[in-house]
Image (cartoon, rainbow, N blue to C red; front, side):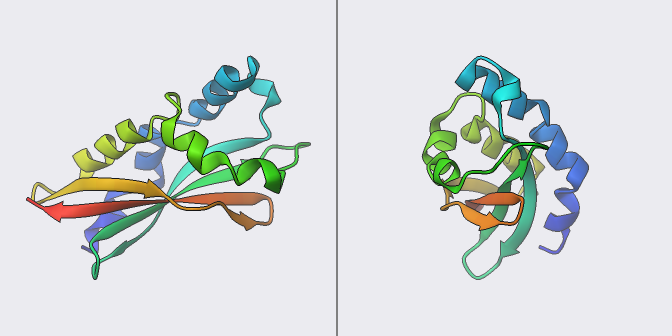
Length: 131
């Protein structure tokens, strides 16, 4: 399982969750991509062998001159889970394609927003099952 980190490189994650998706999300939400306060990036966190889960983060990086308002980001897991531009179900399918043939994604869930300086994170946890 050490190779999972090798599979989910920064470039691979950018390929399956492109930077433009942030602008597309804000365009759909506000009608103007410039209204967005943050950029969304997918980051690999870890693999937990004991419960066979993959851990990723949706990182919300504050845009210059904007503010990551905590009261706005705490509701995002519910929004992201069903928003068609974010398309988490499709993202999980893309992640599934990167796994070895003996593993597949079974189910996924988003955690609560975690506040950090200039960046908030929403955990994405994917349960794996052997094939």
